[in-house]
Image (tube, rainbow, N blue to C red):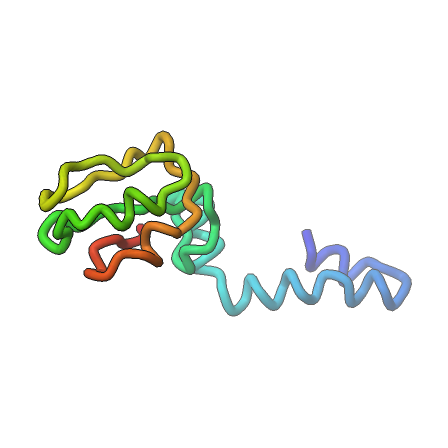
Length: 107
């Protein structure tokens, strides 16, 4: 559609307006396709397409992440691996920022 607008427009604005879209599709086509087909964000920037997870082997159960979580989406006992409830998580990233063991990842 952007190519048709560019080719058929009579004014300079109409001919150049589609350029940003065409350029991003040219250089980042795989990211567009991942968003559309796989419902994933390779750049991990789209909150609706990412999920925070705790790596069980790395989690020491220090409770820093659960105390930092504003919606209490992280549960677990002290000195045992914690879990994140994705249905509650607001994907703010505070848990990842406070984890000292790099046990929280974004997928």
